[in-house]
Amino acid sequence: MTKGDIAKNNFQNGCNCAQAVLLAFCGDYGMDRETAAMIAASFGAGMGGLRETCGTVTGANMVIGLAKGKNKAEANGAFRRFAEEFKSKNGSLICRELLGIRVKTRLTCADLCKDAGDLLENILKE
Image 1 (cartoon, one colour):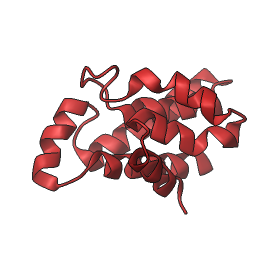
Image 2 (cartoon, one colour):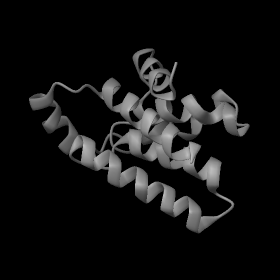
Image 3 (cartoon, rainbow, N blue to C red):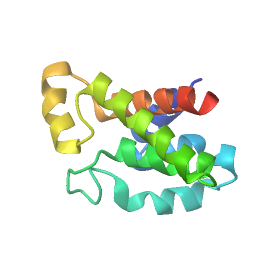
Image 4 (cartoon, rainbow, N blue to C red):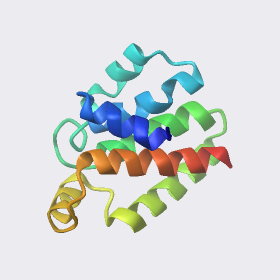
């Protein structure tokens, strides 16, 4: 099972999008699931329900911080790569825009969680 599959499953089982992505990785970096869920609680639905930056993107950035946060330049580079590839594949980083695109593409928020998890897993392996 990929990290994307785990993130999608997390979302389908009640996590918001940011929680879904962070929870797929948190154990790999020594963070317990309860703490991760609390940290990401207000990042879903475009940060506090404002439909701004997609929760899958903010969740991925939290994971990058856990994985690479001791080196700011490396962390920033990993996030920029993630953001570029996510936007290229899905059309935006903004929740409300992704929701509009979703109508045409039939992508669900669960699908975006999977995309984010799989993309992040590949970036962190390098």
